[in-house]
Image (cartoon, rainbow, N blue to C red):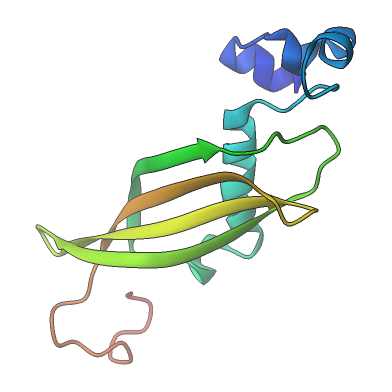
Length: 137
């Protein structure tokens, strides 16, 4: 928490001051920075290996849309990621945009953060079978 506060320059007392958070906030305790929860939650995907979900041809993250911080993430919470691909659209140059819906949940199965994640990836030529070129997605 302190490292994220230092890196982001967000020293808001709701994140960094236990006494303040306990006595003067509606949560009654410190909460994680929203962006810290988002980054940690999305990066949980890497525990399974990035390419168990994303194609090996992914190039760059192009957007985070509809990001919502719907519940607080408290220190000591366990969070996990529920993510699914909801759209794939062609892009110029043999590329495509993959849109996923991500929901980061806590140990009570409450959605604490949600977002649409978009990334640019290479794509197979139209008509090419998935089994013809192992390693390309």
